[in-house]
Image (cartoon, rainbow, N blue to C red; front, top):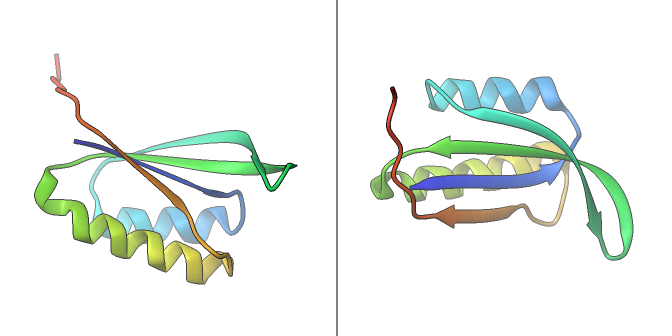
Length: 85
């Protein structure tokens, strides 16, 4: 499963530390998103993990919400097959 978390681009270093404390590998992408019609810098975090990690990922989203003092994050769950070659 690929978990993709989309959040505001705030407190980037703190968020990296939180994610790195829970997962050995992840991808971080800087982006531009729109919320309620207004542009804002976005931070996209992708984590490849098993379905059993879903609650850990959800708790990570709640932590990011608190750290960024925001209403919510967007969590996308994408079924995929990954192979290291």
